[in-house]
Length: 145
Image (cartoon, rainbow, N blue to C red; front, side, top):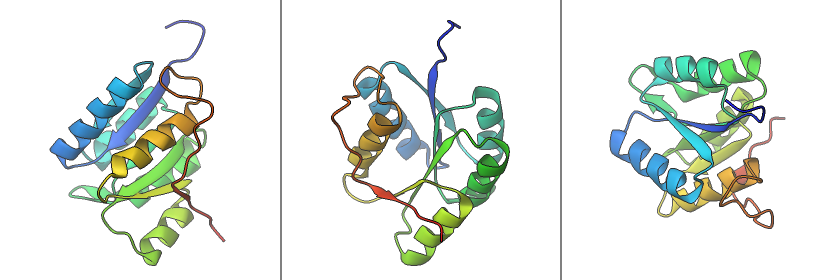
């Protein structure tokens, strides 16, 4: 690896089709960012430790655990990683739980949510190829209070 650190994104989602579509779309849009995939919480822990991504996009409900638990672990053990919770559960309780877990962002999996993911990646990795500095992230940032 060069002196300059590689920009990495970790996607943790048990739905293979969704995870692969998001990963491939982001790889095409942002070719300078290494996209790492994990199909569950245990693999997400391992990949976060091994690759130390700048951004982790986490689903909440997975067969082997909860993305909110992974978010808390990242907050406590790997605080340099920006976390986004990306889930079908778009209600105030999940948004509050995401904020309390240490997630900086929340994306609801609804029609067009990949555009929110693109804006988030552009915001976090502003200097990467395909990321315009003028782009603003318009997804909801979580607040824990």
